[in-house]
Length: 384
Image (cartoon, rainbow, N blue to C red; front, top):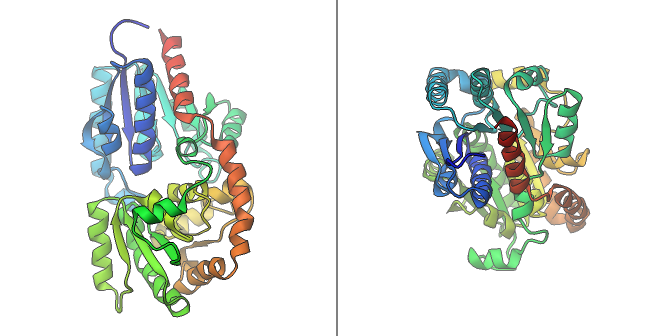
């Protein structure tokens, strides 16, 4: 490689991608301390030195209908980024997750002769499998977090490297509930439910109310249940507080800024929106109940396109239904409440899934950020 600093274009679209990006930046900087990163970054990536040209939270949107409502803004941002990188080409561009935004950007940059990497596979193995053709045309390297993803891409002749998941490296194989409770001032004997209705605005919009209703249902069965809700940022906290105000007879709960992992570690059971939080809960070995809701139109479309029976990562990685999932109309307070209550009433139910969670954790513990950094740097070297 040349003596000038390596330049990386990099775009993350939400909190989980920001954490992956920050860990990747740190790994690359261990090898090349003068490396330059710019694009769209969250607070963790910015702390590692990334320059964010646009606010990351404007990309954090899920669902077909929801994306259409912001299409003009998202399209304009992608156009500006494409022109910026084409006029000042980086050594490589790295799109982290956010496939609907990043794959289009990657294709434009790839067509302009810029090497592109996509970190975190979109769920092409589950739905919209035709996207693999676009990925083949847009991406010089796919970095897969899970082994079943790497197998899928190999079958479709897309260059891929299985790197494991950084969270499996960060989260210890044995989590410490006692320390987590001490740090959060929670009595050791308390029955604790962690409530995570999502880090995106529309997730909170659809799940905030049903989750609060579930707490009310559970309190009839477990009057002394302590419920803690970690909120990703001040916007999500304000949104959740507004939902609380609009809820009749809203239950008493404790809100915490950030600290979602510590809150989950402190809990006996976790009720959460399907997503990266479910993976974290699994790595923490916490029994969980998973829910997800979309706009009616988005759900109707997705129902016809999805090719898998389960949606949550613990179940997908296990190849079976280890944890209960409740999607759309099934995500009711009664269904969610009964599933949560089952863990409290049958402790052996939690013990049975603990071993499977541990096995999956071991398989994902691959020193992921370093493996990802090495794969990206090899791609740059090949290009020079």
